[in-house]
Amino acid sequence: MIRAIVAAGMVLAAPVAFAQQDQAQVSGGSTVSGGSRSMPDLLSEGYEIKASVPNGTKFIVFMQKEKSAYACEFVTLTKTRCGSIN
Image (cartoon, rainbow, N blue to C red; front, side, top):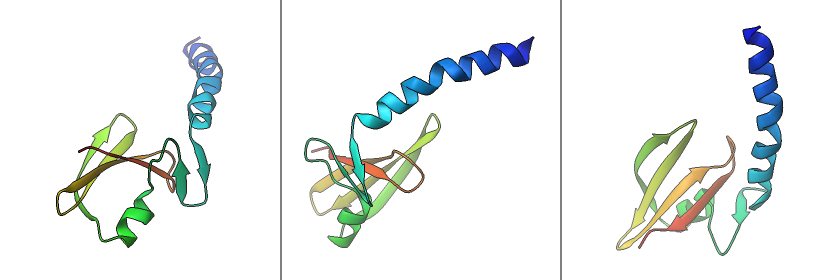
């Protein structure tokens, strides 16, 4: 009985997960969504990883270069979406 409930929940949650993935266009190592950046882009420009924190099943990584800072979320294991936080 519990397996049936869990299976039904997974089937119902799958379209939501795919819909969230489609909100940002992910291509290669970069994510394009309203001018956001990817972690490889920021690392190549000299940004340093200062901290990381778990956020549910994902991690948020905070990066900084001088007075500029970004927060990056792992969309998938290899894709990131970063936004300026200052």
